[in-house]
Amino acid sequence: MDPIILIASGDLRLSANQKCEAAQAAMEKQITAAVQREGATIRRGHPYDPVKQHGFIDSQKYGMEVFRHIPPDAPLIVAEAVWQYSHHVLAGLVTHRGPILTVANWSGTWPGLVGMLNLNGSLTKAGVTYSTLWSEDFTDEFFVRGLRQWLTTGTITHDDRHVRPYPESTAGEAADVGVDVARGLKTNKAIMGVFDEGCMGMFNAIIPDELLHPTGVYKERLSQSTLYAKMQTVSDADAYNIYDWLLARGMKFNIGTDEETDLTENQVLQQCKMYIAAVRLADEFGCATIGIQYQQGLKDLTPASDLVEGLLNNVNRPPVRHERTGETILSGEALPHFNEVDECAGLDALVTNRVWKKLGYPPETTLHDLRWGREYNGQYVWVFLISGAAPPEHFIDGYAGTSSERQPPMYFRLGGGTVKGISKPGEIVWSRVYVADGKLKFDTGLASVVALPPEETEERWRLTTPQWPIMHVVLHGITRDQMMARHKANHIQVAYAPDKDAARKALYAKASAMRELGLEVSLCGEV
View 1 (cartoon, one colour):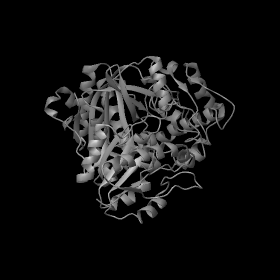
View 2 (cartoon, one colour; view 1 turned 45 degrees about the vertical axis):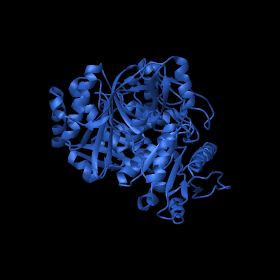
View 3 (cartoon, one colour; view 1 turned 60 degrees about the vertical axis):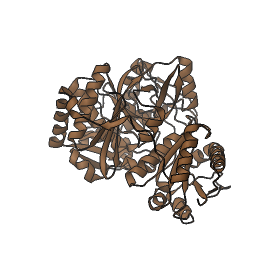
View 4 (cartoon, helix red, strand yellow; view 1 turned 135 degrees about the vertical axis):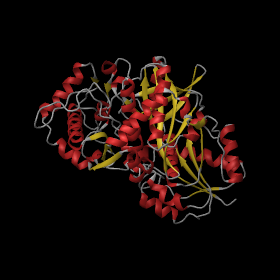
């Protein structure tokens, strides 16, 4: 075999790349040793930059330059110990002819798993053939066996016995509910408000219009500058009303005075103005669901959008009044928000909202990152974690169990608060819409949110991102490696059901709705 070329896609933000450089270098050393133990040679495809103080491909421009010097038929490893922007390397990977292996470190602290899953989803959408692996120390049997297979054949075979086509004939009355929702959507249509596409280079998060339109959903392309401009029309008094409403319901804000390191009242009030602006624009343009990109663009103008997103996803949320009439907009309704403007999650959230309401279940829904996991007392418990866009209804004690902490300066220069809480125990339906083979596809399954001791929760927060909301999840009938091999994105959509039977009914109803909308539906695990 020719020498293997190793590359590393990174963040666009210099601070993130610099902070993650040491973890990336340590992982690459372990991967290199593993490859050499198999008798192969490996070399890095781009150098460490002493001026920038990191060795990542940090832009699409640089990615294209790097690939000009990589032999098109060379075996290629994309090694990820960090969150990365997939478009930095997508152009080179789309035309690369040699075998491609994406690899991540099994770590919650360094989010290579999340970055790799996004890259995998983007490659899947682009129709690029690739293999994928993950490991804690790159010496375990699973990794070594997979690496050996890739070095020998150029591909890796993963266990996907947990996946099967959806047999709608078994759904009973639930199928009728889903079909009714889907037909209503196709007949009456709905608008997806998109405040700029392609957040952080997530090619997989953009649904081509020709695939979306048959579902009855059409995009209203709104600029983030429109959102920012609308924020400037919101009064300080209206912003304080939102803030006071949250405080009155027991939400806690960890306020400080240093704008660079603390969450300040000024940041929170700016977020309250964004919340009002988002609801008013959604009403003006008739949007049934909206997504805000934030990264990049708004990050240089305003505090983070995550407080806004979490509130929008909650039925019980601060009232927003129309600018001219004074009437409350969307009273008693959640406005489903798809974080990081992931349109696949937006379609998923919209269908969930309508199916759950039809069933009489609480319709709050959100997406999380499939961040990491480890065993606890003999069962594998995943960490589902997102940057703050979870609805308080999903947390233990609701708003009273919700706090807001400053977003990490590494990613969020202007701060802003999160919507932080511990997800309540219960039954959930998880799902994922994605693009593959030029079609919209839908995977779904059942899971339980479990309670862990406070010290275990705190440890998991410490090992990931303690400012963000956390969900402890046990997937039904799916191993860690099966989930990683199948999941075609960093995001996963979740919604609660009253009990296990209700969750099963909701899953069948939603699966039937997605099939009626034209998606290819697969059930995953025990349902």
